[in-house]
Structures are given as C-alpha cells and as structure tokens.
Image 1: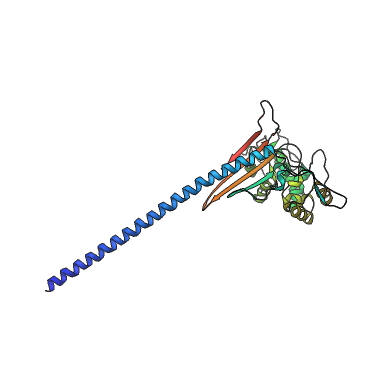
Image 2: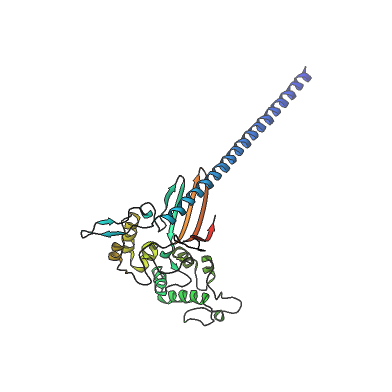
Length: 306
C-alpha cells in the first residue's frame, strides 16, 4: 500500500514537472512570437519612414527649384507690411533652422548657409565678435582666430597670435589647406571643446559669397548686436513678421558688398521621418542653380548623411 502511494507521489511530481516545462515552453514561444511580430512591425515602420522621407525630399527639392524662397515684403507709411510676392515658400517654410512639417510624419529644418560664418575665409571681425560674445577675452579671441587662419593658409609664417608648425614641434602637422570637414576644427590649436561646438553651430565650409544676417543663428545675431535686439529679431522671424526694413531698423545693420538681406542658394537641409518607434534622418548640404544651363547641374549636393 505504501509502495503504491509512493509511486502515485512520484507520478504526481512528474506530471507537475512536465506541466511546468510545457508552461515555460508555451510562455517562451509566446514571447518569441511577440518579439518577432514587434520586429516585423519595426521593419515595416522603418520602410514606411524611408518612403515618407524620400517623398518629402523630392517635394522639397522640386519646390526649392521652382518657387521663390522669400517674400519681397515692404512697409507702407503706417508701418504695415505689404506683400509684393504671395507665392513664395517663406509663407510655409523658413531658412533659419526652425523645424516645420513638410509632409505626413516628416519634419524639416533648413538653414541658409549664408547665415553662417565661412570657416575657409572668415571675416575676422565677425568671428572675433562671436568668440567674445561667448565669453572669450580679446587676446583669446585673437589667438583662436589667428590659429584657425594659420591652420588653413599655405605658408609657414605665423600670425602674431597664431600657431604654425614651428610653434609647437614637428610632431604635429599643420594642414596648410582649407578645412575639408567642420569636425576638423577640433584639431586646430587653441580650440577648446566649447569653442568647437560654438563654431559647429555658427559656421560652415559649404558656402561662397556674402553674409546674410537675417538667417543667422541667435547666438551669432547676439554677438553682432546685443541680447535684446537678437531676441526681438528672432521673435519676429519665428512669427513670420520680419522684413528687410524691420531688420535694418532694429539692428542698424546695413547692406554692403559683403552683407545682403535675402536667402541664398546654399542650404543645409535635415529631414526626419518617424513612423511608430522607427525614425529615419537625412541631412544634406546643397547648392541650387535653378537657372542652370548647358553642362551646369541645378542641384549640387556637397555632402549627404543618413
């Protein structure tokens, strides 16, 4: 009798163990199935995000080639804004890196590169004003500026506050050529991490020609004017109320051979498409030639990432 009860006890334990194993196996299969379904959903969302991004990119480039970028706004005697051009992109978009939605699930940032400092041929007063506005002393701003220029020129003559190869040994090579990537400014002597980040936000190597302060980042506007003026300009700009005349009146900056108040054809574009938990990002530096002829290319992509 005792033997039979012992056998029943063993059988019960075996049944319980088998049940536990089957339960764990069922849970594992269920979890694996859920994971596979989730991965499939992610892949589907990723593919859809790519499709949405490429569609938005095509729309963006087409409009930039076929539609005027800015309004030719003027002011009447009462100060009211009058639109001379009603079909421009600027009514829907902006060119100072404020994000906006261009299509379903796609956000865009466009920065007019003319609103940045040209690192290859920096206007030294503008660059020094930016550095001093960041808190650098006059001497330190001179040192950073001269070091940046010495790094890129083709001679071995050191500027007063600069740094040619002879300044700190032959084991460190000076480029003596134009910076090919904005990330390379980290290798220039006298460049601290915060200065590198500042220059990445406010400078470019992908532009030619004059400076367009109307599309400049706030930190650069503040360095060229002051904090209150920069904040007022940015507020008007963000609300679509800034005109060339208002900008002149507020900042006191005037157009010259090296300064203009319109959007250039050198643009930095970032598109971001998000479907579910999947995101696709693409950035491009582009030069547009809407009226290109013969062998010229209407769209010149300097660099594309993502």
